[in-house]
Length: 70
Image (cartoon, rainbow, N blue to C red; front, top):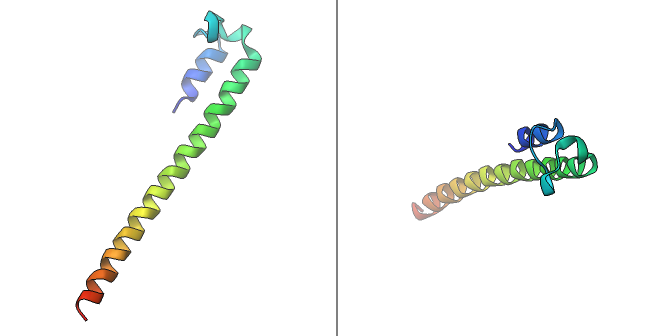
């Protein structure tokens, strides 16, 4: 997701905070890369939860239909 932007920043192809090139912002770049990695993991977790919720809703609807037929 955001990894490409961090890669460009690390390579000095994009300005970091305060207009610093990537080569001058090593520590900040590593911190940003770590945050980006954590955010990507969270996005994947949220997607997994969204899929699980959709499956649960489908099962609940199926159960509701089964019980209404009784």
